[in-house]
Length: 317
Image 1 (cartoon, rainbow, N blue to C red):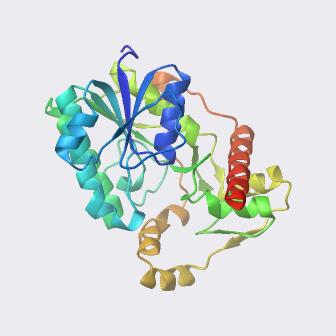
Image 2: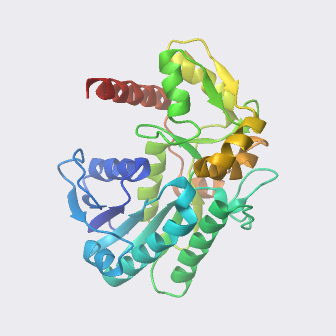
């Protein structure tokens, strides 16, 4: 598939911003859809103000698009209500323009898994956030199967990287490491757990968007070799020049806090990912497109640099 045409990014959170950086780095024409002004996008990016839950707005914003990258999300505790209209708008807009859809997804649809995660696992989500993710993926693949739109799905594990604050390996790990304080983790930190580096995820999503054979399929993006959460945290602290300080948040405390916090209730829904091994198999992607993964030490260093810079910016504001 040619890389020509307009590549539209819907959703300007950490995943969407990483996709924009990747597209701009490849010299492609990029359009970002935003509901409000975004001050720090690259100058090469065209910005269209639109609400993609409004079908007419979505169609207008995606006019002339060749590929639409669906990285739009919502507050964690409101996924069941807010994510379906986002998917409906993106499918409608892409259909009207004849654009292909690349959906940036996570692994929640599978539910608890015994063994490595592969793309052929059935959806067995146990809570509302997982079920809505499973339903959205099924809806998108059904739209592809019907010929309404061409679509593909790229799935990542818990991510880390620049701008990746709200993640298991986000600000709750990198900020304490920089400050030499204690990082709190969920579940058993001595179990193997796959983490995805955001720029790698973005690069692989763009690869999917520019390869004909990617469409109609679900893909697990490649990651560095899986190690335990404690080992990962130890590497982060070491790179920050600090001794490792990791504390497990007691499950009972999380349960009590979840009673009062909708966000923590949603977090607790996925606790099974942290009480058993969570190893993502990316051999399907590797066989089709090869593997390019940023060395873990480089990825951690870049993430620490971003968090350090973001902290200085906040202090200066």
